[in-house]
Length: 203
Image 1 (cartoon, one colour):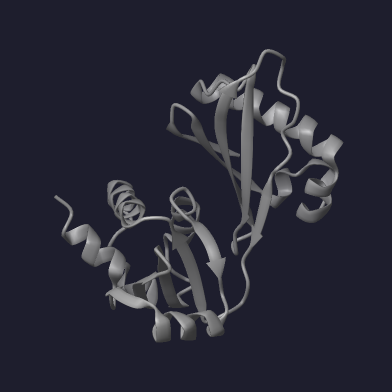
Image 2 (cartoon, rainbow, N blue to C red; image 1 turned 90 degrees about the horizontal axis):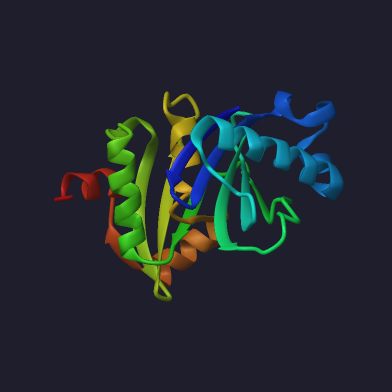
């Protein structure tokens, strides 16, 4: 179990499948609201002791992502302060990765994409030529879509990539059909290695 405090109100938790209570599957774990709630309260208590991330008396949102390497990434966002104690700590959304040639992530703005590239550079996540065959950025319906084609599952920092990108955007699709739609009706913003190109042009 690892904790990373991303900001004053946001925490990332990396959890392995072996650390789930009673050796449950991930689906069984999150579907059991009582078990999930108590487990997350314990985890958040550990987060407070280790990195000083306090969720007491706050309303929180928990997003979860299942990674291909068997780990799970939970992003805890601290929202408005509550008068009563924390009432719920059940993951709000579960995203699972699918076998496909493509992984498509949706950014709400170009600034969010640049912020991800900058963050990736700060944590030494660059030189991504060996990560995927193509990484392209499209503009479609006022949103930016990062298309990653043929990911190299042996890439050394693949876990770091998956856990980092979801702090700035959402996994959107892995379907070839949506890529066809982007190519037909979207606008190519950055082709080839979009992340590295953006990183090289950051001031």
